[in-house]
Image: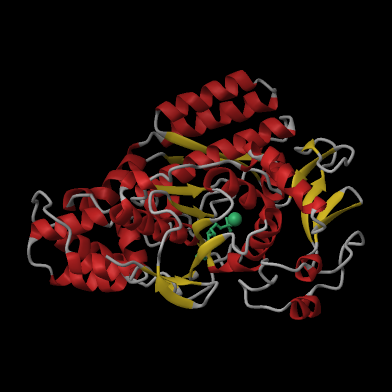
Length: 472
Ligand code: AMP
Ligand code: ZN
């Protein structure tokens, strides 16, 4: 069976041929763990989960390696940690933020029917590989040290002869265009406006590691180098598929290509580059200031979005109705329709037989999930339909889907809110007295009652405040 994929690099849809069919390798940029993932972040996770399932079907489950990283070093994480846990040393606060956010992310995407990736590397565990690549780039003349930083020079890459790609080839931009578009306030240590950071110095108290290239003092990596290092470690110098949202094409993926091809001397980093389109909510770009920012957790477990909670598979189906490269408008109406459809498809409870060939063919045509869903509407045999739904990552029964809202929000209503409030007050008091053993004990007591806490600060007074939610 042939699998055809659209490649951002060539701007065409072509037959996919793995470099080594015994080891099919895919890398997808994962979350930066500082806050709840929003429903836009769910899109690449669902889309590439469908591709992962299809690749496993075509090549054999044990022959496919899917790597999705966790970015656990970032200024946004540091800011969040300092704000939420001002009483803790920064590194300890960062650990709390990244661990709880990653755990929430795992719970959210599991509820959306996504398989865990084969490997989930963390940036902070790959600093040695990052230093290695950075030193290769400096040795090769593609990067330079300035003022405690290491910077990559796209101009040096373009001046090199040989098999290297042109900087800008993935995003289809020219270096001249990029120079013209560069901001005026370019950091003084950069030779060219388009140079980007591979390594930067850490301030006192910030997370840091010994710097490469003989630079004194501790530093930390730039964002782009993280993915070059983690994909290299787990997939090798050149691999098959690299994915992420369309916003990552430039500069993130362009810079990953530049780093990896210059460090390893190949013309490619990945053969096929795949990008999902953007998601908006009820016709508007999602943003905190517009008040339409919606997290996966809110949709699954609260009534915040549309007056009720939604089963994860309803969210999954609503997402897959649109082809992954198209923009998607995420609406309450689409969720209602997706739920109705799933309930109808699951009306008969039968053991699954074999997934429908026509549906798999449609999926193999650049993940045409819209055509798959149209096909599902036409499948009469409930056993074939059940197998096809299984194939796509749907497994909930009609009863689970129909009962989801009442179940999660019924639990929420049954909670003794006065008791929760008094325990939270006691915990805040324990934290004020720096009695962290007691505050952790109260957190655990609430967790055992099924209550998850979220610590923050009152934006007006700066006082610590704690909100709560019922864990799913
Ligand atoms: P970030 O944490 O912003 O780096 O995003 C993690 C992943 O979610 C990346 O692959 C982004 O491209 C993707 N993403 C972020 N926002 C959206 C959105 N509104 N629609 C679709 N994908 C998104
Ligand atoms: Zn990346």
